[in-house]
Structures are given as structure tokens and as C-alpha cells.
Length: 362
Image 1 (tube, rainbow, N blue to C red):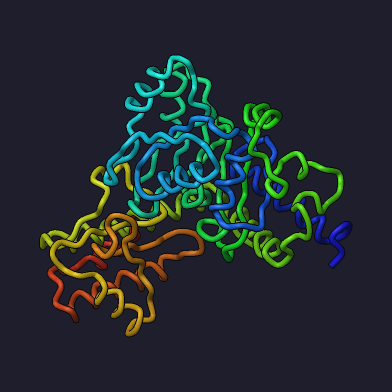
Image 2: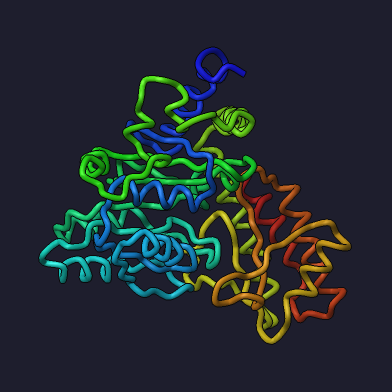
């Protein structure tokens, strides 16, 4: 396909316009043939220089993993230590920034949703904490596990750099990542010393279509993303958020019932801090591997294992992206069947409770 004119150029224009709607921004988005780790690199390299100090907000595995990526690029990384069972504390962020009277921290990095813990961070409140501290650091937000699953409003919330990937809420194969840059990020870009050929926003702003991809576009992934955007906007973005909220609530209701026997609980303690993308279940004195093997080999349903510090200590149910009530209820039924088959302690009726939750809500 011609990469300079015609349908592919129109596809790019459609995808970029769709990204602005998803991020809720009027600012320039960029498309990379990369996974989410590539988006991390793009956000950092386009705005910062070697030796710059960044503050990572911990709420699970992936905020700190982004910090590790920053270290390999020559940035000085500090971490606001957090608890995986809780979201980032805005007051602690404000206090940390107030201590930086010289404003040597150049960026604050956080994930909106961490799929290792199942927590969601209140981006709007974190922005207010940065403002209350009077700190000029760039505010960078990873929405890989949240965009298309729950509200995100880049411009309204004062986010300087937002990034995401194609394979979760955006319902596409892995391989595309997206970064949106606000005015303060573009200003920092002018003097950024980490800029690289492939990630560079300046090159990608060039007049020729292939500049937008720093070479040949990832054609088939772009066609997939265009199709996903059509699905999202046909349903309505707010309705997509609502669907995710209902399915997440039903999942948590099932787990709360199962957990009354004392053998499991949701990792995130505060119900209001539980994300609508994935629910992480901590097991008490039993191995999750046999349950996962049962659901996969007998029921044909793959449930995730826990990752990071809690590897092997429970399981994860994803309810993000192209997921319906029928798919979710089938998953929950497979899990409850596995509990029965394997003799895992649980209170019966989790699936029934999930069904009742959905029946009442719709």
C-alpha cells in the first residue's frame, strides 16, 4: 500500500483524531510501532536530559518499572514509596514536592491503573497536589491499563504527557503505543537532551506521511486500531466506561462472596480505589496454579496469575476492552467450578451475586 498518499494517510488521520477523543485532549498525539515500554521511552526521551531528576509514584509494579526504564536512560530516579493495596497518597506527593525547594525534580511519573495490584490512582487529585506544592515538574501519566476503560481527561486534569498501548482497553493486538504531548511537554522538548531518532517528536511532525512513523507505517495494526475506534465510538465512550464499571462491580461482588470463607480477598483494600480494568485476588494458604490450570485446560478460560512481588499468590481477572457480560459470567462460573473441583474454600453463590448485580444495574 502507498505510504505517501491515499487510504493509509486517511487511516492515520482517523487514528490521530480518535486518540484526541480518547485522551480528551486538543494536543498532538503520536503513534509508535512499539509496546507500552516504548511509550515510556518516548515520553522520557522527548522531554528530559541525562541527569534530570524524576519522581516515581509507586502503587504496584508498573510505576516503578517505568522508573527502572528511566534509570537506564541516565535519569536520576527517586520513588515515593507506596503500598500495593492502596493508591498513591496525594498529600504525600504534595509534601515530597514541597521539600524540593530548588525544583530539581523535572517530572512526576504515575500509572492511572496498575494491573499488578488492581489499584487506580486519582489523577485529578494528584494534579491538584502538584499545584498545591507550587511545583513546575511535568506530570506524566501511563494510561495503558485504563484508557478506554474508565474516565481520563488529559487537558482538564492538567496532564503534560499521557501514554497508552493498544492491547488492553483499546482492544487491539499488541504492537502499537501512543503518546500525547501537552504545551509544557512540547516546550521541554525543545531543549531535551535524550532525544533519539526514532522517538523524536520533531521528526514525526515533519510534512511527509512516513515522518509520523519514522519510516514505514505498521499498516495492519493501524487498520485494527481504526476498527477498534469505530467500535468504541459507535458504543459511545461514556457507555464504554459504564460497561467497564458494571462488569468490574459484578466481578468484585463475586469475589466478596467467595471470600467470606476466609480463603481469598481483593488486594486493594478500599472499594473506591479498585480499578475497572482488572481485579487482583490474593489467596490465603492455597496455591493458585492448579486453579488456573483447571480453568484453562478444562474450561478453556485463561485467568491471569499474580505478578511482581506477589507472584504465585493469587490470580487476576481482566475485564477490560472487548468484554461482555456473557464473557465475564462465563469466566466467573469457570473459576467457581474450579473452586468446587479442587476443594478450595469459598462461600458458594459468587456467580449468582454477580448476576444479581448486573440485573439490578441494567
